[in-house]
Length: 74
Image (cartoon, rainbow, N blue to C red; front, side, top):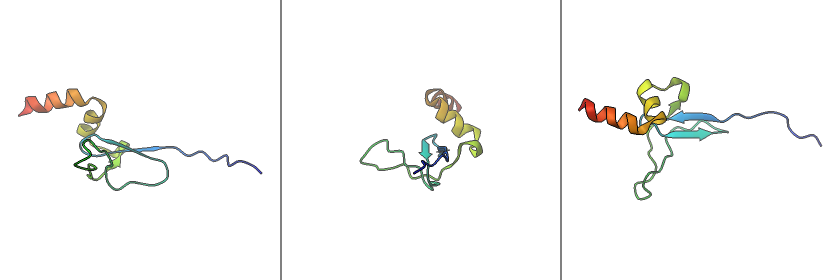
C-alpha cells in the first residue's frame, strides 16, 4: 500500500470582528469563535483572509491596538 502524497493546506477565514476560523476540508459559512460559552459562537459570516477588509485584518493581527483606535474615533 502506498500512502497518499497529496498535501492539504489549511485555509484561514475571518469575520468582521477579527476572529480567525481555520478549515482544512470545507469552507465555513459562519464564525465559530466562542468567547463566552453562555452566548455561543460568534455566528458572523466569514471571508477568506486574502479577501478581508483592512479593518478586520487589523483587529485580527493586533486586537488591543485596534480597540484603542476605535475608542479614539468615538
